[in-house]
Length: 261
Length: 281
Image 1: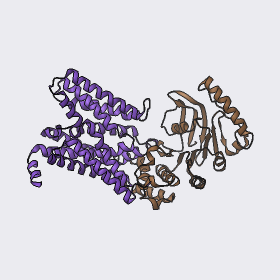
Image 2 (image 1 turned 45 degrees about the horizontal axis):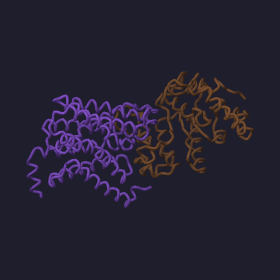
Image 3 (image 1 turned 135 degrees about the horizontal axis):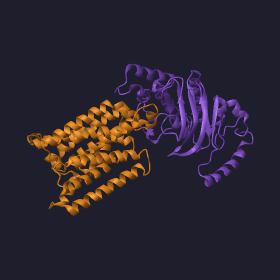
Image 4 (image 1 turned 30 degrees about the vertical axis):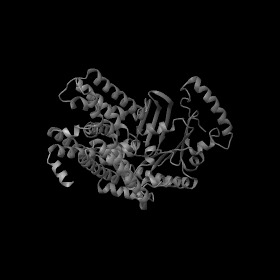
């Protein structure tokens, strides 16, 4: 059975669906990139996968012995975190929280796990430094180490490179790829189509055309790829979409719109 | 001066005031770190106004045990206010402002219309600025206050790591299976209890000071959450103690003296932060 099976999933708020009939599977070791325009429901999908919000309808099935609290998550940075007085070690350790249950304090094993993951992300030397004084790339490494404390199986990343400079972005991508090679399943939201095609094994495109398939299928599908007539078409479709949106309200997405190559 | 102080400490009401003051300062500073970081600095102010409104109702109803009405009302408001943070019909800060001003207006209105007291202005003033109530504590008050404070400290220590996780990143905590909503509820209830207790000490208008100054001062200097919590607790206790002593010696109002000491100490910390590079940009 697949690690994650998404069946007829509809996403939205207060039973008002913004995306309907999503179907896809994620197998162990996959690297799935979710791409699409702003407002196409990428973050909503991720939040639903994490049970942070309820799906409007449909199911998310976990397989391969994956438990709900074994999912690692790298959220987008919040305002609160920007000036949060906490040391790197404290933050990484907080990733072990779900292992504690009701036990109030961390045990040796969890502290060791936090140390290992800091080592893995190359942030051991800044363990006592304050999170708010780190650079954007370093902060992402800290949050990644924290996510790794929560999981050995699957990582969900919500735009991990936004706001990073090109060099650090590249480092971040290879770091994630490295984790994927070590056997961790990756689901990543990205704006960067080029990077998605370069690193991912599967791509889910959300928006007016919902597409799910392998990277190769995606590349072969020239309506979604740039460098073809993509950008011209896109702006035209966008206009039509926006126009329809006002008229149809919420009927923005084609039902079950899986386009095969 | 020491002699004078020694003489004052002969009186039980002075000792009570010091004990209660220090305990409340300790509790409010612990919670303050979380509240400030969660962008709820003003919740102390809002809740204390709610408590003021509830107190007005209680005194009009001539209840013997006012706490029985004030505490539940404040706790419910706290839960509602901290809830709005997540489910935003009205944004957090606006909700706090709305409830706080509304409760205050109703409280004063009720007191004014139904008042039985001959010195209304004095009553209102003492609830707002806590001018005398700290010096009129009974042994029972001190006992209740001690029990509640100890409970708050124990709960805080036991849930310290969970409170940290929920404060730093609620989404992550929830996603990885921590029951963040329950801990938010816990924080709301404890906050309400502390606010109601603190009304005796500094009055409704100055409570925010006890919540925010220790946390903000500690954040100027320290880099880790643990140190921030520990320092703000120490900061708050020392300031409250000094404030009470000064107010006794100089005959100034207790609440505002404590807050004045807090403000002065904040500037000390601010300068220290700049000098040691603690408040790095």
